[in-house]
Length: 340
Image 1 (cartoon, helix red, strand yellow):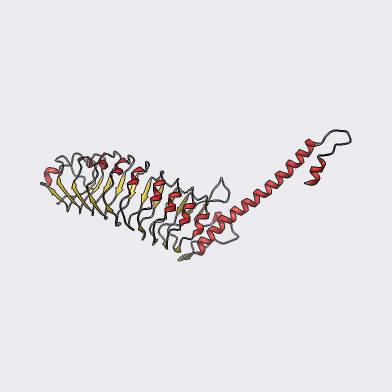
Image 2: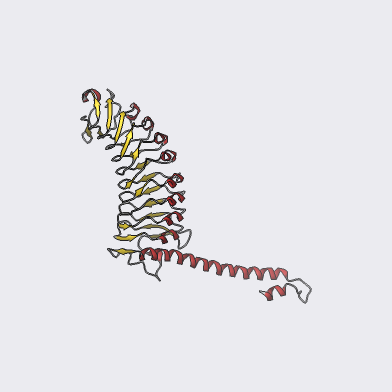
């Protein structure tokens, strides 16, 4: 390189300056160096993703040979469950190890797969806590850790996933309150936290997630009231808050949601009268049994629910004869249980 620079200070025998030639030589040299550096960087990146996967495997004990292909020295983009990006060569885009017989904990190395968009470790025997390094996966849009034995709290760092649209942590042993960081996940379409041991109230900020279509928080230990802010979720299609310890009235705003077709509020301590707006024509599934609801239902309840297939209102404190409040042409495939 020094020789090239020295050459730039001379002229040829014909008196012509050779700076243009020099520039070309220097440019070629720099391009060669850049190419070498990029190759080294790519190799480093490849090794980072490969090492992260091998570290993840090292923390697991397997009940099957599902990860037998995960061996150093082989192309990890061909390993079982690994999908690499076409745009960013040898970067892991998705990891699908659902029902793979995995036992053990999710190691912190998962946070090194920084290009990961989809992670599915559902239906395994994973235990321990969800590592906070999960928040390093800034491109994540799909996260399914359901049907395991995960413990501890939902890490607040999960709120560092701005593109997260699908979250399923159901059927684990998670405790504590719903991580407040989730309020930053404004692209959430589906959130499933049912069948855990979560406590506290149903967060009011859930009503600020504009794209939410499905919410499953049933079979936990939630207390308090159903936040009226849920009436802001114009895209909401199904909500399951069943089998908790919720009290107070059913928010009238739930009945104004034009897309809502499933409303599961059964087995709580809800009281007061059912808002007339709740019984609207889009509802297909209504579960309100085993609460403390009262009052007289609409006399035209049946005609206001032409799409209803599942209607359970039993074990409440409603008044009046059933035949005067429910008159419809019953669907043979439908389920009705109205006994007070």
